[in-house]
Image (cartoon, one colour):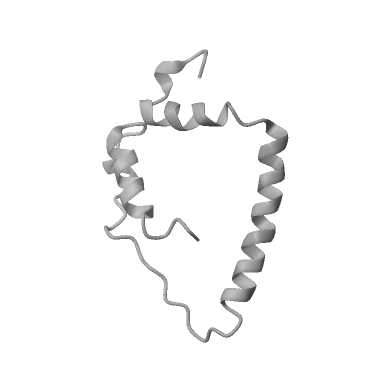
Length: 88
């Protein structure tokens, strides 16, 4: 980012800059903890489930050829598509 800032959108820069304030060791510890917490949640939450009904994207996924890379349209589309499914 420092060498080629024009290659990143403002949204990407904002998201990436937040991570600059997190020490690598803390990030790695959190990744390990996240896996354990997710496994515990899934095991407990679905222990007695017979059916899992999942949300689907609220719009059809557009073909890659219809969306310009690193454009605001890409970020809006990704946000819309993933808004109902990000927790999983």
